[in-house]
Length: 344
Image 1 (cartoon, rainbow, N blue to C red):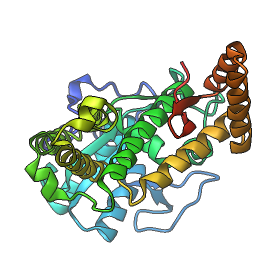
Image 2: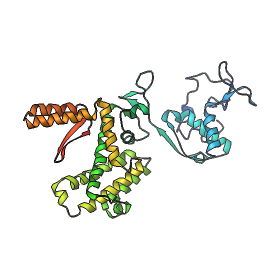
Image 3: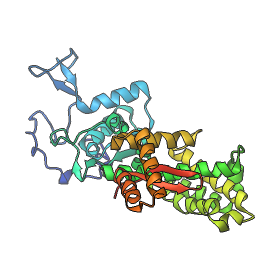
Image 4: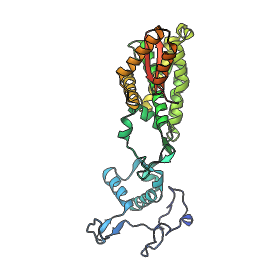
């Protein structure tokens, strides 16, 4: 090829490419690595008139043309699947560099290639019958739970869709937002701000660590992991006798709440109403197990009656029945509550 730097995006050497393995090399090519900007007309295909004869745009030129027309000669981020790195994106970059006399960084500042989607450890495809859409997933899982699940895998890694992993993400989401709701129950109407985060050492470090993780090739998995110690400390302040008596309890809760809120904003997981998310997560859990809220409440009442009658075997049976459907019962001083949990 006549263009210097061809292969830099995919880090491929021309000597390693083996032309003609998938399709025969076109005899009109001066070099096997050449690619067409305009494809000659073939029977049965759509075509247009052009100075080069009847035909259609080449696969790679379509993207360059749209980018240059709608976004300009230079863009910030160009995305796509790993399988598009070569030859599609490599050729797209080459023709854009050649037409605009650009170096590689002048076309797109960042190339973001995502990993493949697997379903229960098998590649997702229509031929295997395991193909589904985002709309299909959202019928059974809350959007925040799905986002939490996706963020927990680095974008360049293959992601494995399975009910067990999505259930686990949904349960983690519930724990996160329930902790924030419980926190506001203590703090009242005064919503903590970024200033509270700046005054709290642990939360200030948490925000700094999250920004560092995101600055390192969008390390969303590392950013999510930052929540665990903070949530553990918050629940100790909220629910343990020692934590409730701690004189710095309110100050610490403000700091943790504000720190987590700032990281949630970075990840697109924030909300103005966390209770509404909890309610939505419960609705999704009911959809997955095919129960209604009334059914669950009736089972809770039956369990309470069994406990009053000291029929603990039946009480445990009812609890386990719901647990098998991903619904956990929690006995509190205010009564029995239920929440979604992952099914082991």
